[in-house]
Length: 223
Image 1 (cartoon, rainbow, N blue to C red):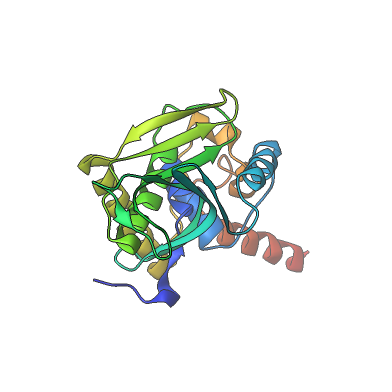
Image 2: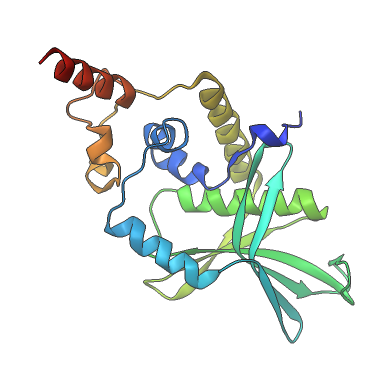
């Protein structure tokens, strides 16, 4: 199945979805957002990785910043922080206007440090899968660069992680088509969530954010 371009979801949303399905729905379905220190610092850190699309050559490596990517089969689009093309005339693919053949590696930049959960891995893997579809290539691994430790973490792109990416996007499309916002499931992660003041997890165990706001407006009108 190929999705229409009008139905594409934001690729980066898979990170929100993996962290908390309700958070993803509040941002991507209900169009709600709130900044905290983590989100501001993260945005500034990403600006250093790319500011518009550009590329440069370093010996046998082409470094592309801010490269737009998409997948018709997964119905998503987004932007890669860094895509590196390493020259390998035996195993690589050809690139338009470039001499030689190249292997493709995706590098996703994150401000903090490696996480116990896999939301960063899912986002990076999704970007790599888009590149595979666009370039008709195979990508065996990708990298996550974390600002606090100042180094890359190599991540193998096996079938398990690829299937979790596909399953996540299928579920995200289903939620989006239904305009469905999951109910609150309070966890310790709620305290660090940038949307905790919008989500109101302690007050909204049985309500969506939209329902809560509508209730408050109704009470003000009655007053």
